[in-house]
Length: 299
Image (cartoon, rainbow, N blue to C red; front, top):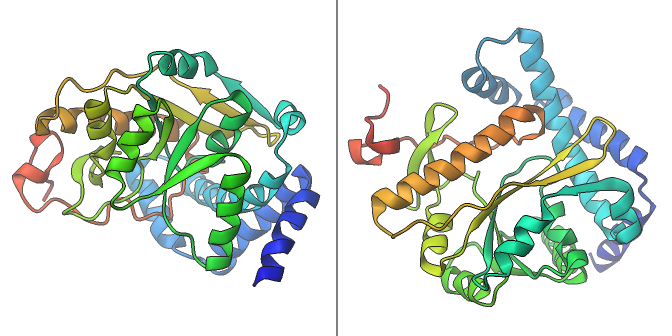
C-alpha cells in the first residue's frame, strides 16, 4: 500500500491537462455507460429537477455529469502540480477581494460551496494567497486514497476537522480568523438536518453553516469552481452574506434556504458539472413542521 501511495503523486506530476481530460472522459464513460452506475436514477432526477427538455438533452447532461466525476478524479491527482505557474496557466479567480475584506473584520468567514466542477481546488489554492483555511471532511475509502488526500492537504496547508463532533473546532477556526470550507449540498439523515426546498423538492440539509455563522458572527461567502470548455478552471467568489441575526429555528431555516438557493442557481448554470449520482433527496418530511418553509410535504 505504501508503494501505491508513493506512486500516486508521481502519476499526478506526469498528468497533463489533455491526458487528465481524456482519462476523465474514459472513467466517466466506464461509470455511466458501461457499468451504468445509477444511470437510470440520474436521468430520472434530471427530468424532475430540470423539466421540459428533450430525451437527448437528458442523456447529454447525464453523460456530462459522469464525465465531470471522472475528470475530478484525474484532476485530484494533478493537484501535486500546484504552484503559482500552474495557477496562472489553469485558473482564473474572480472576487478574491471579497474574502480579504471579510477576513479583515477579524471574525473569520465561511466558504459556502458544493460538489460542482473541481470543487476541491478553491481550498487547495488558498495558501498561495495567504488565506488560512480549514475544511470539514469525511474519511475517504479506501484508506490508501484517504492517506493520499491527507498528504495533499498538508502539502497545501489545509487544516481539516471531521464532519462529526467538530462544532467547537469549527468555531475555534472562525475565532482564529480563518476561512472555514463548508459543502452544503450533501444529504443529511432526517434527525440531523432540516428540510429546505432544492429544485422544487424538500431536501434534508445541515443547519450547521447557518448556526456557525450566527454564533461566530462570521459572514458566509459563496465560492464555486467550474470548468470552461477548454478545461480552464473558473473560481467565482460571490458577495458575502451577513450572519443570521439570531439562532431561532425559523431564522436558521431561512438562512439555510437562502444558501441552498444560491447552490441551486450555480448548478443551473452548469448542470453537467454537478454530482447528480448523489441521492440528495433520499429522506422526505414525515410531518408538517419538517417541510421546507413550513409548508406541508407533497403527497
